[in-house]
Every structure is written in structure tokens, then in C-alpha cells.
Image (tube, rainbow, N blue to C red; front, side, top):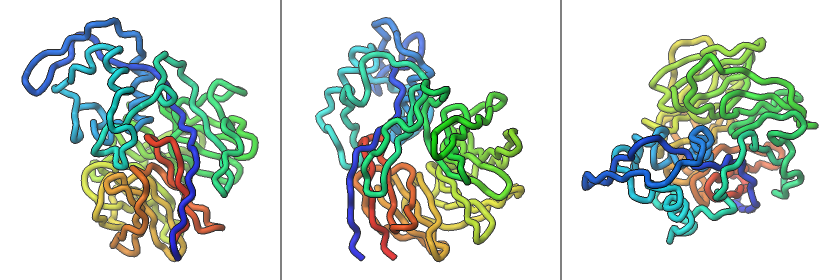
Length: 345
């Protein structure tokens, strides 16, 4: 079957602020020092959220010290002032690169405003199967008693929509959007809560920054497994037929991991030819669908082998499968849209 593509605007939730470190920033590769020459008015915490929301870690690493284009210690001059940094974001020659991992995209004021915005301004949109946005702010931080900073992975269990947020996992009524539950992670040092899925004994969420999968059950948060072999766990989904989770890595190698709750060891569910995996879903017949930012493609794994089946229009984030229509929705953080593809059978 020929793939068919529908494109729609995707409303991204971002907190706007310019975060910075105090003191001087170490300079370019020539060894010069670039000093901060203007007052810092941004909020570093909100700036960190913005950094993750726009997937800046794809090139610059999760802390600015790793990745293909690390900031530390080679701080460029355009980071010396807030004014120069803003001008840099607005003035990119390559306005909308097809592959953001190799070219810095432009950020217009509609995407990142000049003014510092408040926290608790994340929201979740409701979209119809044909791609129309039926409710732009179905669930919105700061409204109707909702706290929501930076919504990421989501998962539905019964009437509850579970959402991974910046500092918590939150439950909402899937029909009304009313807040139901918040899992408190204040006793843990978090890296980057990312995706959430439900097993038979609770909800589980990945922390990409600390190589951890947390378990939420009975109102309590515990560590399910912490292992460097997870290689920056990103997407997670429940494989009911085999009683295990499938977890895809954003960093490190290209090994798709299998993990059974309660176990202290990881298995191998697949070995891919790409990297920087993000979303993962189980398809009929035991196949696994995975999105890769490494090659801007969707891959299907059958057994241990993965094959690229769809070339997307950029670096895909998490994915969601419409099982009734055999379609997959693919959001793009940097492009502000969602692609809907017909899946081959």
C-alpha cells in the first residue's frame, strides 16, 4: 500500500525564557574568552525546559557538554548577551532545514518570544483522526486547577490520560481534562522525564538523563531499574504478548531493550541500523514501530531486525498509532507540526 501523508499544525507547549550561567563563558576554539556583557534577565530553570522542548539536546547534548556541537568549553560570541543570542535565533539563513540534526533551524518570535513567559503554561491539544485540531488547549497549565509545565510522553489507561511532565507524572480525565493525580518525584534527582506507559502493576516512566525507569503504583514512586545499558531511555511501551516493556535509547548504541518489571537485567528486543530513537509502539503481529531522529525515519522491527519503512520530513519525536485506521501520528518539536502516515500492512 502506498504511504499517504497528511500534514497539520502541531501546537507545541514551550516555556519562554533565556537561561544562563553566572560569571564568564569560556570562548571559542581559539581559546578566547567571551564575557557576558549584558544583564541576565531570563530564568535558568525555564530556559532548561525550553532547551529540552525544542530538542536542542539533539546536537548539544543533555547538559551542553556532549553531543556533536557541545557548548562547553567553546562558547560562541553569540551567547555573550541576550540580545546577540536572540538575534542569532531570528537570523538563521537556513530557516527550515529538512534535517535539524545537521543544520540549526530558525526560531521566529511565534516559536520563541523575546519576553520571558511564566511557568505552568504547557498544554495538550485534542486532534481528530483526520488531523484537525478540535481543541487547542484541551488541558492547559494555569487553568481549571491544572499544573502542567512541559508535557511529553502520554499514555491512556481506562479513563485516565497519564502525562510525563518536567518534574512529575500527572493523571487527567481523558474526557474532561480534569486533573486527577500527580506523582511526586521531589525525593529524586531527575534528569529528563520523558515517556510513560502502563504495565500490569502500575505506570512506568523513563528518565533519559539518568538512565532510569521509575514505577508509579499506589501513589508512590520507586525505581524500577537504573542501568547505563539503557543508554538514555526515551520511548517506552508495554508488550502485552510477552509481558515486558520495550525501551528505545536516545543515546549510546542502537540496541532496543526489553525489560520485565521486577527484573534487574535487560534483554535485547532488536538491533537497529540508526540511532537517536524516540517513540515506540507495538503493532499487530508482534512487530515494533520505532521513530529515529538519527535518520528521520520510522523503522519496523520484526524479531531482532529493523527496517526503515517511512522517511519523515524531519527529526520525529514520540509517535502514536491509530489502530482502527492503521495510521501513525508523528510530531516534530522543531517544525511545529504533526505528520500522519498510512502504515503498510
